[in-house]
Length: 252
Image (cartoon, rainbow, N blue to C red):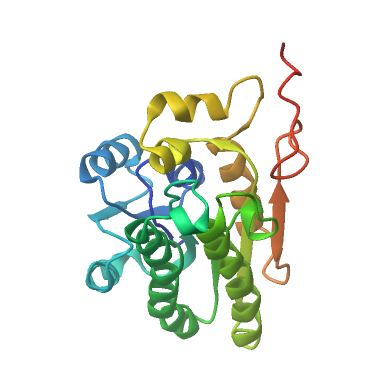
């Protein structure tokens, strides 16, 4: 069994993916901006059966991404899976009130970072003769919502990218998938609002998805037989029917 690359592995869905793949015998190649978190995860998951390589990486920085891929030790090859998990949202303002620095941060991490690392990993997978690229999308790539303008646009881009990659790689034996969650309780809202109390209110009176729920589905997608490609999965909490329709009164 080879390795799985997980970007943004220091918390949330990325961390949960690291845990489930390690449990099932995959070597881990992890990156994130918070090296202390990566060190903690590596010390917890590394054992006599699996290896863990990790590197501090800003997925909005081209040089960081190149350096990360070039530094992957050869004994972590083959690279079975690339999970493009790193991404973020900033703010929830109408477009005319938006912060351009926030826009750049989202576009650089959510789109450009995915493009760059995928471009670098595809030749490795082509040489192997197989591989699987799994992109973290969002229900926001299927439905827009007020104030979500740029974030929704970045996730719509991931939806289109996943389909285009499937076409580009159709003769390579490389599978391409995306998983598009609804409301997941991670650090997502804290990052978006830079306000823990405001973030907490997002999940009040509703049972959201958790990072482990998404990791379970990603692992299922990744472990289907080679001739099976699950192209896109939308996963929602039972109490959420669309971006704007949910049952907040259910637990009252």
